[in-house]
Length: 385
Ligand SMILES: Cc1ncc(COP(=O)(O)O)c(C=O)c1O
Image (spheres, helix red, strand yellow):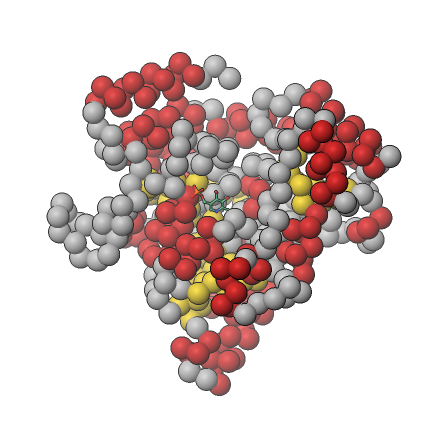
């Protein structure tokens, strides 16, 4: 990729400056991410997990509140809610995209409101926010979540950890709710040389709040008005990210091209029906199903994920051919032992549970070649032949 020298020069610049935490590199990155996403403000922080916590607290989530999120995501989408003192309310996903199902969210809020009328609010928990995750780099249905936010007066906090550069109806992920969290974990489309994250918002007041929260709740040095934490971003990470940021549009475009190649080769292989997993009249008719693509979404393919019959055997077969693959995620959040206190059980989120048994992420990175993609699809065809 040839950016190594540029990255090393950027790191050397930080070493020369001796300014290792926050400071000019972080501020410059914040301005660049704000411009990329279209959100007016960005606040650099220590990780995507930290970014989620900052976003939730700035959005007004308090102990005793409830926050609706997807049952099918990385753990941090839910653990950040707990760290904000609130209770996660898991809702199942859309069978096509595997993003949070809007209809089910509406039903959940309506049934909670009815119960609140019958009992005291504290018994059912106050839904303060909804946290949709843009899974695998494709935005959740943000038009409809926007309408829900107005109708039910809840905040929409985006988990955009996998979606830097993604769009919904021409608007950038990060500018689609009140606040949004991004991760720069080393496997992400835009990745640091360690842990880092950022929060975006269009609201200057929330941005200021998050700046204080990431720095011990401190408006000025050694004065503390509320409990924050050390959630700051390192200048070295910001410098690395700024080099890579100049390439992100091109890298995301390459990912889209690779996804189109996978789609084309899968269709030609006869392994898929050409329908998405939600449309397929008989989901078990083909060994492989692709996920649905929302027409409003500009996908950044953080992952290219298929749903596969005999998924674990297929994965083993691919490993023997030295083809890397990964399962995001093998156990839905409502079945994680740590959330047993919520009282949910197997069968409560059937779509997420089925997805957990079927999903397989195939190789996806900008440098992938057509020959490599062909080898992956041919190998999958060999497995099922
Ligand atoms: C959907 C989602 N949310 C949150 C996170 C947390 O980000 P981090 O690992 O930077 O804390 C990640 C990435 O790991 C993620 O994929």
